[in-house]
Image (tube, rainbow, N blue to C red):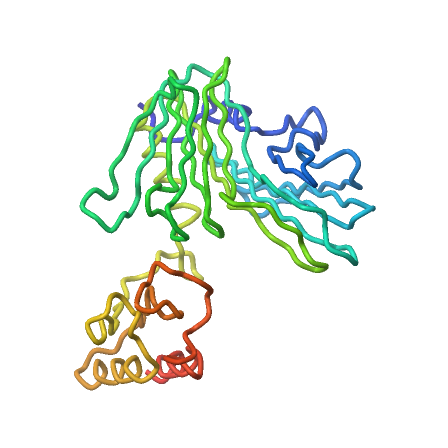
Length: 335
């Protein structure tokens, strides 16, 4: 089967909540749902002062921005859609910002997604990195009992649920990837015509102070005709073309020597890392003739009492890093 994007693939894009360019701007059909003080809203609400822009990012990407501001409370909602012209890929992300002078109303239940029509067959999803032997298993559910919700078990990206998944239909496949600025979730359920798919933040019930803003997890979708093997190969092609980091001249990033000093004092990961032992580690590698291109500090540099899955907040442990991470960065620059 053809491993390149076809016109048939691009014609399927309208199934992915895409606006019909010939029908004008349809704020109400933006694939965003949320509640304000318990009242459910779809897209950019009509009672908001609404605006729309379309701009070309590069030869293959167009950015559509749908925005609206509540003139009563100052809440601004912006949904951004990236449309790829060389692959059947669509991306959505939304921002909520308080442009008013007082706290916003209660915002809750924010999700991106919608209904996908077709002969739905199965939902393929994984359990991600459980830090056990059963990690990275894949499961296929037909959703015969109605639907299901998947989400990680903690604030990591994939402990118990993998943020990459597939919706398999009779003659096409939808691949979905959910971003990780929050503890994400994905809801999927059968409908009379196919399946509904929504993603968002697992716990979402808050007010925004003046000037505060939040973003949703990003939702990336690819739709391709044919089977899962073809879908997988096209996803790889898209990822290599648009996501894989490259040098300034467009070439792939060359291999790099990545070194670290971890498991200090017999503790897991970097939970016992300190400014002192990290600087000594860099100096010892260099003394022995190994100059790292990358100095790696992984989980545990924040305050966590040797339990790295307890994320807390993204601030260096002041007891172990009294000067922050700056001294380690400057040591890296020295070599």
